[in-house]
Structure formats: structure tokens, C-alpha cells
Length: 349
Image (cartoon, rainbow, N blue to C red):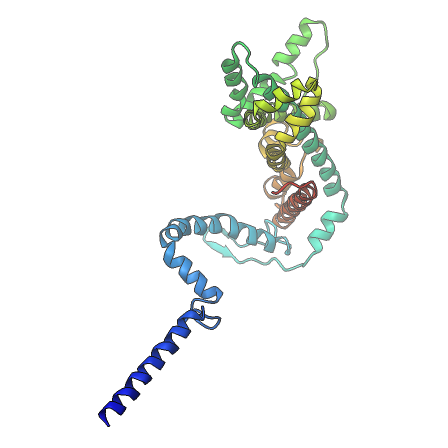
């Protein structure tokens, strides 16, 4: 009887062990299946948080600061663009008296007025001309200088340092220096022309000359960045490719088209995108050099938005916010189209 009981106990224990072994071999540990705590998105997030808690701790303050500095003004600007807020109906204090806000929600009226008016379209047209001209010429000059400085020439280091100098000088200092050069009566450029018997040029007082002047200054400021970026791209292209092409009989132009330009594609796409965004929003050059003048000849979208908020009376915060949102939308559309074109060409960005 005791032997029979012992045999039943051993058999029962063996069966339990076999069942546990099958459970472990099934590939679905307890608690990690679809319904387990570690199987869903919440479980993966908790696991990542537990594993990389130090990285999350370091990143969180930066995310919070960026959210406050960028997120709140963006949301506030979008909200104001949907109202009729101006200097006279916003919340303000006059002495000891506190006046509450009285502006009202107007929906998309500001966007309709901006997009159907002549001011926005004419300013957008000049902004596009300004951006395309500056980016195109800056890229061309930067590429030419990068190719020259990529060769072994005497004084190459000195030339590099001198060409980077405009990038090292603060932007407002450079613009004020150019404004002195452009002075119609005492400017250095007109004195040079006078020495050659040429009449003084109204660099900043004539609409056409003012446009050429601001484009020239922005190119002068942008070439160093473009040159440095493209020079780095050129130095990453293996020299063996040029040697092999030369042995195959390729001339300099063929080597440039079939080796240099494809080798610079990844760098070029990035610098063109960044340069376009920066130039489209290049406030300092226009504002400090011409303040959008003469008249509104050199006014771009971002300087006009500033003018709505700080120069006209009463200051129109709603219209300024509307133009700011439209600028953001235009740049996002450009980035999306640019990315789509690159993907069709086989580039990843």
C-alpha cells in the first residue's frame, strides 16, 4: 500500500514537472504575452524607461525648456491669428487701472484677408526672388571656392581663414559695416566710383539698387558656411576615384559632373535646405540695412510681420501672427516637397 502511494506521488510530480517544461518551451513566458504587462506599448515604455532612466533624466529638462520657449509662443500665435487682437483691445495696464482683453474670435478671416490681398502676394513674390537668388548664388560661389581650396595651393590655410572671417563676425556688425560702405554721400564704394569719374549710386535709396545691395550682403554672409560644408564633403570623396577616372580619359568637367557632384549630394541637400530656411527668415540683413525700404521694396514676409506688431499704429498682433503662421506653413510645405523630390531621386533624408 505504501509502495502504491509513493508511486502515485512520483508520477504526479513528474507530470507537474513535464507541464512546467512545456510551458517554458512554448515561447510565451508568464506575464509577457499579449495581455501581459510587458507585451503592450505601455510595457515597452516602462522597460525602456527602466533601462535608460539616466538618459531620460538628462533629456527631460531640455524637452521641457524647448516646449516652453517654442511650444507656448507657437500655440499663442496660432490662437491670436484667429482673433482681431490689436494694441487697443488686448489686456493691458494703464497706471493703476487694469483693462481686460476685449478682442474677439474671428476664425479664418485674417487668413482670407492676407491671401486675397495684394500686400501678402507681392511681399511673397519678392521673398521668393530674394531666397532663390541668395541660395543659388551662395551655393555656386561656395562650391567654386571649396573646389579651389581643396587643391594644394600656396597659402591655402590663410585663404581659408580669410574666407571664414565673415562668418565669424557677428551679423549685425557686418550689416552696419556694409551700410557704411553703401552710404551715398560718404560711402567707400561711391568714393571709388567717383575716382573713376562715375556718378554716385543710390545703393539703399533706389528700389532696384536696394534689392541688389541686400542680396549682395546676404551672399557675403552666407558663402563661408556653404564653402566650409562643401569643402568637408569634397574631402570625404576618395581620391582614388579621380585617379581612376583620369586614367580612363575623363576630362576635368566629366570628373566634376560624374564624381564630385554625386559625392556632394548628401551634403548639398542638407545645406540647401538649411540655407533656404535661413534666407527665407533672414530678418537682420533686411531690417538693419534698409528696414524694408525704400518704401516696401525690400520688405520680406518676416520683416513685414515684425512691422505689423511693432511699427504701425495701432499694432496689429492678429495680422502679425497670421503672417507668422503662413511663413511656418510655407516652409513646412517646402521641406515636404523637397524631401519627396529627394526620395524620388533615391536619396534618404
